[in-house]
Length: 118
Image 1: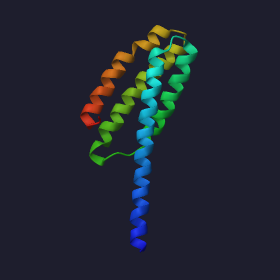
Image 2: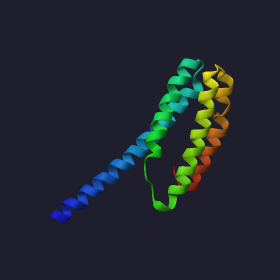
Image 3: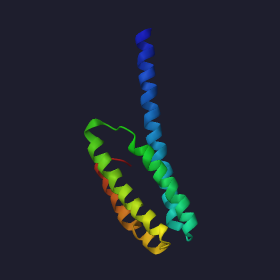
Image 4: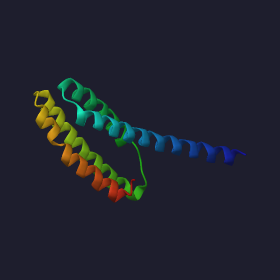
């Protein structure tokens, strides 16, 4: 009985971690859509803060050991693009803040393909 409870507890923890990652990625995707459509710096800043918060949660997650390095690398690249966007917004340059969206899309597609994410 104790073994069964341990197995269930471990499975529950794994499901929570997977759920945290899934939720973070979904929230990032939703916030990116708002960010891309935004026309005001204030709206972009709000979306960007949500993206960065979700990115922080995602970066804390563990994936399969064989995928962890690539997962971390992809999130580092996304972080760098978002940091550049934040710096551009800080100067009020909306066009420059949006200029990284094409690179971001390519980065997301590349790492989703490499990691087999649908």
